[in-house]
Length: 347
Ligand code: SF4
Image (cartoon, rainbow, N blue to C red; front, side):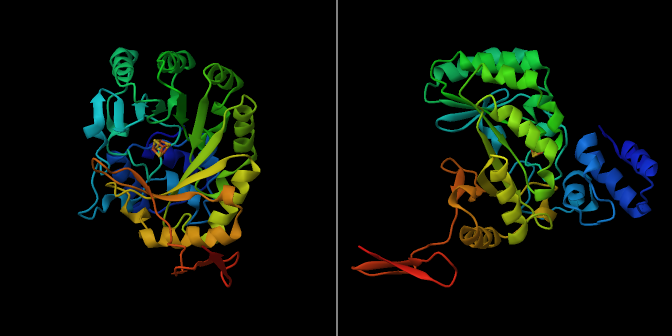
């Protein structure tokens, strides 16, 4: 694993890759502010001959992270406000998130939590009693998301202790794990880990593939190990300028994902997080992309396009085109099965 600019430069020298002094300086400065870590596996996916390599852009710090428009904040989703006991975020009525780790196998440059969780103190088992008491008292919580950071960086016994604790709460129905290990270090999805998870069903795993280059044979095998234990897999991509804001790329990504039995679930608008402005797209671009994908993909391969909003009544809001082209007392005019056709629905 590469954890610093100097380690990265040594690795590049070993590979015979030359980068400019200006880029080295930018990498040093941004990695001094925002944590950097890249697994050997993910590093090896980079095409150093391609300046726009989508893998490189997701994991190698850049000077663009130092440019922050006024509307970019360290914690735009205000997660701290909803952290009612340490490491437990309760924002939506029936769901709570337990932030059990503050590191990942690869620190994504677009991470929503790059200013918060990734820079915070690490959760320890001492936090568990208060978190469990809170969940026991709030019987409306029936779904626990174990996240961070990446929960799979934890020692297996510690992660099991956390999962077992939440599973012991009668009102908790589903436990979800949020992890990018499948994408960024798939060998970490060991048989031992999968066997442990399967003891606490219903367990769901959600991951984040953003580009078809990430759907490798190794990632497929990791998914198969989880699926073999009856663990459903969902994908939450982020719409990232210069990486996947292209309909052909998204079509290929989602086609590959259903091919490895990972259900495309959400496509997020990139949050306005300090250090990520260079990845932002306008929300209308996401709406148009998903609209075009609707004609190209089977329904179960189509993610919902989501804006994550802050506020008491905020949350994940699904945005899509209004599909009623015309409405009369007698009928609705709707888009057809191709961009050129329309359908008449008689009321
Ligand atoms: S895997 Fe998730 S939590 Fe970890 S750095 Fe990437 S986006 Fe952030």
